[in-house]
Amino acid sequence: MNTQPPAHDPVDAIIDQWAVVRPELETLPMEVFGRIYRLSAAMRGKVDKAYSPYGLALGEFDVLGTLRRSGEPYTLSPRELTATLMITTGGMTGRLDKLEKAGLLTRNPDPHDRRGLRVTLTERGRELADLAVAAGLDRQREALESALTEEESRQLAGLLRKLLATTA
Image 1: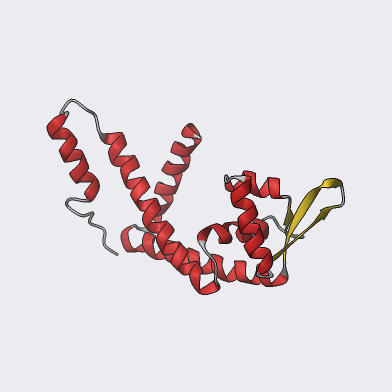
Image 2: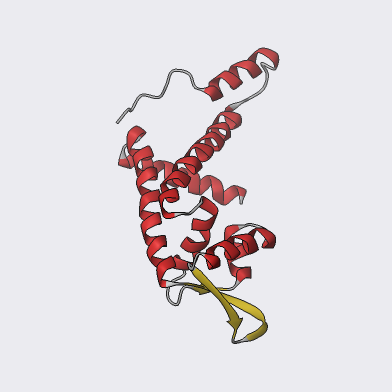
């Protein structure tokens, strides 16, 4: 585990440039969020690569994972999925089409709403979600353990939870 942060990272370079042209700016927010954005993009790529051996992209895993963690019978409406994943209905339709074609989920009429549908994870979809979630967690764990102690990871999780609660 490398416990020493780099002496200078790309965000520091941005901060240094602002310090030259606008020295009066307080850039701590930019330092924090700039690193969060870059970390998010880097981890999105790593996790997406972890899902690719299962034939899944990150967005497709998100659908399967949402159904899987909903518990038995692993069924939600497209509206519930869309709200959980914060994507457009058009984006959801494309994902559902692809996953249904692959045999990972089914879409059936909602027995309680003639106009509605229910999306259900198939057994194959459940198995794939279980494999992919473990692979994604492995990549995330590797990233944390390469730089932080377990206590630091817990502290960071708590601080991010606190920050997210005030901005959401």
